[in-house]
Image (tube, rainbow, N blue to C red):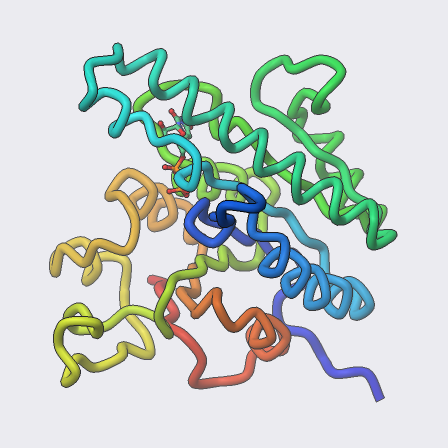
Length: 240
Ligand code: UDP
């Protein structure tokens, strides 16, 4: 019997740090392939999947600004990094026979399709995985903001935000072994406690549009299935 799924349309944010490769290859193929196995499993259950791709493994605007580049150009370089990552994932999806379409917020003719909500909704309804890259196409934003905005636009049931740890902790678990994992948090608690899980702009957007967020351990993508079927006790749910 098929498991009942809780979240039918999901927006998964893949941060650049998980895509960081090594000297042999700049992209972490092993991580992407592990993720693809899980994506295949979710697709077989009928889950619709949007992926917002980060670029921090290659370039972040704020880092380039520190070495003297103008911020707008730095951020454009950052956004182009998300395209490089997005295309890498797109190609590996293709090799794994997963129907995928890659959209960009700006015109990158011949490389990505131009983002259009109706086209993205159709692609998701038709069972394609949708990759969103080039962030929002404007400087001074992050791919977390892009994930929130696209999540809201496509009416995702959940925004899945992967991190290096199991969710949101009372303090940094790498520094404080006694740090406790929050099972649930309200948006306003995250903002008040100044928990740095994503930038405030993104959180406020999610709060205003009631887009629930689950923070989970991205190094263990196998749990994506448990999250989708609504298994309790995994990660941290941030909601109203
Ligand atoms: N960026 C931007 N506007 C956007 C999204 C991203 O200017 O709407 C730039 C920004 O410079 C950022 C870089 O793209 O540092 C990479 O995105 P991000 O830092 O969010 O990637 P992640 O940390 O998730 O890997």
